[in-house]
Image (cartoon, rainbow, N blue to C red; front, top):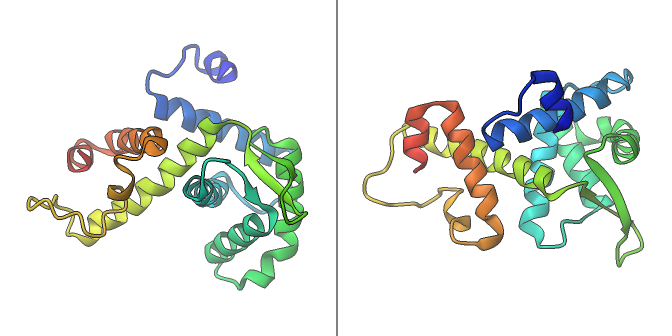
Length: 193
């Protein structure tokens, strides 16, 4: 956050913008120092947002087993490149090792009950922001599937935000998703509310 303040000459006013800038700054810096990584920031954010959502949904520990993390990375990376998961497995293993050691965003936190490593985000803020990003993307897809209009009948069937609205643990995630909607456009923000 201090680096963002130094670069911009001021601190951004909206939390969503601050978290986005912090996440992108860390990933840009990390990727710039690893030319062998064939991912760009958008792909990393796409993968990490899915990981964050999975972690947040799994419970309060904020930990994800290495096997599940590897599976999510392989799925999302393979999906982005239109190749089978097996085609990216070696790259993902190398990527996870360096991501946890040098990114400032994600780290290995110890060993789980099964004897395999477990990982977490360095700070809950990153997990919540990236989780909100994934939830917001799912919500915008749902809105588009509804014809882009708010359902006036109050029917929330299929709304991906609805199950988390009154869950205390999801409060920050939902608020950040609302912030993402307001940053996208006014009509989307009104639909979100």
